[in-house]
Length: 137
Image 1: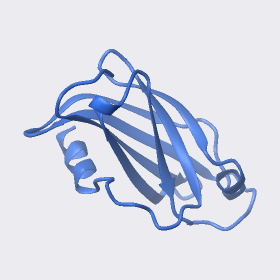
Image 2: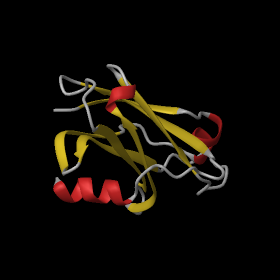
Image 3: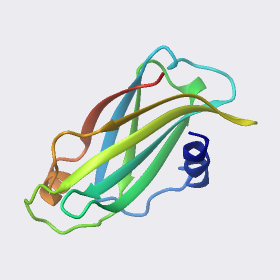
């Protein structure tokens, strides 16, 4: 778990994506989802090719908890990684956490795999893709 938080923070989402092909949205819910001082919600999205089980791309997004309500909706932007086709081979995995920054401490955690597979056409023409709810516990 601590490794997850360290990886998330190392890929801090304060950078702006230059050009996005598609967006993925997730909703955070649970007793842990409430405003607190000096805390962030951090979500790491992973796109896998289900035929090869290879990681295709990752993105991280974060927001201060003081600027969010309950539920919290977070959206990330992915750059172009595929061409237009309708072969449904991609799956999305997301890990979410609420963390203190100083000292770096995980407060609660949740994760989710998408059940449907997605194609490049889904990403390009169906964006944003809503992967549903992650409950932080």
